[in-house]
Length: 120
Image (cartoon, rainbow, N blue to C red; front, side, top):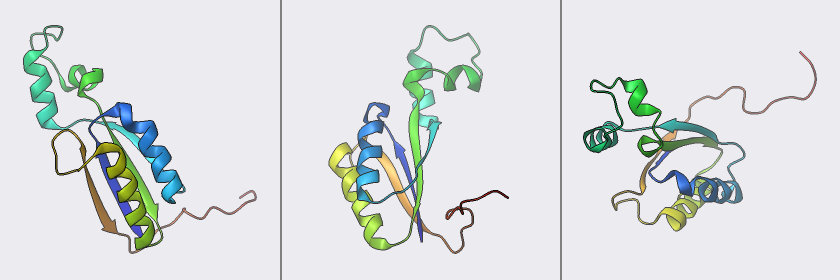
C-alpha cells in the first residue's frame, strides 16, 4: 500500500484533481485546507485588511492563503502512477512554480480502510 499527499497550490483545481484521482482508482480522499509559511509571508506583507499584529488565525482564514492538501491510500504502484499522471495532466509539471507538491510514502500497516457492513 501507498499513501499519497498532494498540496495543491490552486484550490480552483480541486474538483478536477479529485475527479482525476477517482478515475485513476483512489477510492477515498481526505481534503484539508492548508497553507505554507511562504504563502503566509507573501500575502501578509501585501494585505491591507489584516490587523496590525495578525495572529495565525487571521492569516489562515483568508481565501488567498489557502491550499488544499489531498491524502489517499491505494493498494498498488500502478494506481499511484495513474494518480500522479492525472494530477500532472490537470496542474502541469509539478516542478514548475504554483502547481503543488506531491509525495508518496509506503504504508506498512493500515486499519479501518476496509469497513465491514453491519452494526458493532
